[in-house]
Image (cartoon, rainbow, N blue to C red; front, top):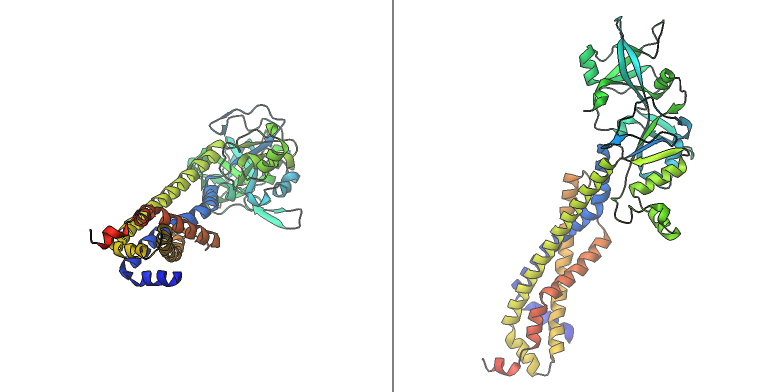
Length: 431
């Protein structure tokens, strides 16, 4: 009997029901799109932020206090201790090893450069030894390809990167312009006094970084180790890791945490937690966060997520207002029906329950349609902005249906309360 009453109610005034469902579905479509993108935006933006470069730097613990201003280390490049290159595969064994996207060891020194076949040495040239695309053997038997091309993806290269362990190099654009160097030239590097011209390096590319490296020669790490007479050593390690923006808990000092809090902190991909894991894995190192990169990522991500939540709240409010207006008009139009039901013995609770059930059915219809439309919208937005569409999720469907039901009940609460309080006698008399 109850279901028949609901069905008869739906059969009347179908246009208003369709308008209510359409308004609700549009609101839920926006909610679905915003919610789907917000669930996916963290990982997507974190990967996009890796184009900003490394967010962690590893140095020897034995070094003196770093002179760092604004994230830039101003110590002389030859000052400090060294770290063993053989420990680098351990980087991919930390707890958050899947979040380590790239790393590159660096050995810097000052040298003299001799473009061939010229006979005039260029004094005090900055030489940076690193990996370009190096295959790191992992303890599990696999390999991990990494290097400066991945940790510094904003470096624009004309030509090609050098091959690791080859007599090749790339030079900064400013140094190339100043000394008339071009791709294919040969250049010799030497430290200290020398009576013979060292084996030359072939210039395979000219890069532009927008920084002081534009005045440098970048060579394979093995070449820099040979020039510095430090085989198998490096000075710094730049690490690019996917992280979660730090909140108040993430910024706490792990030394002050109890065991439960420390486990929770380590099991969350905060930048400081990954730094802690690296320090535990690489003995004798000091791991520092490059704050200007990490904090910039966190601020942008929080603002994007806040914008998505504001859009979601605005869509919910608009849907609630549309449902409320439609419900109020429906109650006014059906005053005589409600009065007749009460005159035949239906209580206020029964009338309210009948009308609320009708609204809930509209909510589920509108929510389902909104989820379908919102999924298409989310895929279009994700593909356009992030280059990858978020996947459909049953969790999002469940949340959207619950929100649709809540919005519908909240929006129609006042009209339903008014309907429950109608007195049948005055209405039936036409007053």
